[in-house]
Image (tube, rainbow, N blue to C red; front, side, top):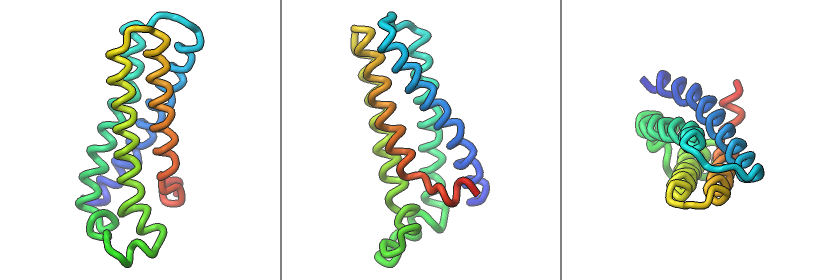
Length: 143
């Protein structure tokens, strides 16, 4: 079961990063072009939000069933950088990143000025993207 969730989590990471990156650049282009924020633009923002939330749910399940997650959270694991990454840094920073992205989307829905709506999406999604990229276990993921 753990192996299946690890593969699903790794596969969804590609979709989540792709959706988040596309939404980030789409929001940036919209803000700098000065066009109106439409329903299509809101759906592009969802294209980044939904896969990130699905990825979070799979990651939370994996955290509790994997021996690298909650079971590895101890003082000895904090001395090893890779164990600390899996048990603490990766989950914590990515939960914060999903929160930032969600705030950006919610804020964009409430704003009325189109430029500010686009700006909310690209700024918050950009911060979330940087946070996520900073805590990906690159050595394990790219193998």
